[in-house]
Image (cartoon, rainbow, N blue to C red; front, side):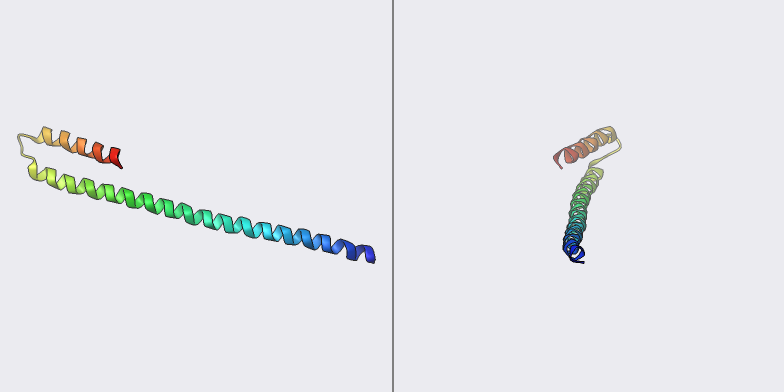
Length: 88
């Protein structure tokens, strides 16, 4: 009987250790998921800002385009998109 009571605390300590370890792992995964979502949201916001810049520049370019300078307008538009993409 005394031998069994000596074994029980060791089992309880191991169980407690495993439980604490699992809690830390789950907490770490939750925090990692939150950080990943924050990162995704920042990237989404950056892409939205770039798309807004592109839309604004397209509107400006459309006002400047005429039928005779259509090719120049397309080239300038492409260059503007490349500049924005390169700077972001």
